[in-house]
Image (tube, rainbow, N blue to C red; front, side, top):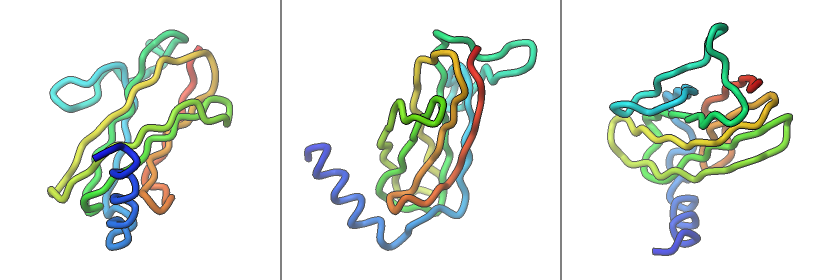
Length: 123
């Protein structure tokens, strides 16, 4: 199945469950044991050049996909389509190398519904 076929099938299937009951989004420097670690803090902020991960846990969504949309200064810099399954909870993540600026990461359902959102700054 090609990527386009996957997306079209997921969008068609997603009509049954358009949004998740529960979705979380965490931002950090690494994924260890399927969890995000190295979150930003006042003493350890994100810096330009860091690779940062957006980690999502979603349940009640059903098989299909979610999207991670990365924005810097309001401009989309990356979009990742991440498959999901029918299991109780599904975890997935994307990553991005930062430049200095204000960032936002948004998790979207196939119909465009916002499931989760985080903002942070890279210095």
